[in-house]
Length: 126
Image 1 (cartoon, rainbow, N blue to C red):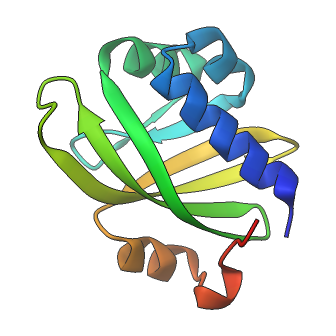
Image 2 (tube, one colour):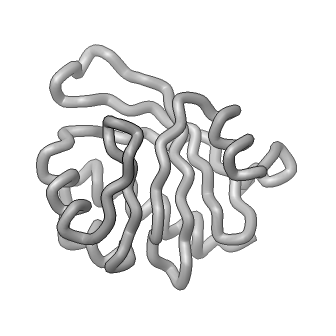
C-alpha cells in the first residue's frame, strides 16, 4: 500500500474542489482517461481541463481502498446545478508515479470494488 497514491488522489480531489485547474493537470498524466456522461471515455489533459472548468462539482471523499496503484474512493458528489442534492458514488483511480492516469465513476462502492477487484482487506486506515 502506498500513501503516495492516497496523497495523489486526495490532492486531485482538493484541486477539483478548489477549481485549481493547473494543479489538477499537474497531478494527471498527459493521456489521462476520464469517464463521460454517456458511458464513453475521454482522454487527455485538454479533456480534463474542459471537464474541470465546466463540471461545477464538489467531491467529498469518504472511505478509501488501495492496492497495486488502484485507489477506490467512496464519496459524495454535489453539483453546482443541484446544490441541495448530494449523490453517493465511488471513483476508481489508477495512479502511476504520483500521477492519475485514469478515473472511472461507479454508482456504488460495491460496484467499484467489484470492477477493481479490491475488497475490505484493501481499506486504507491512515
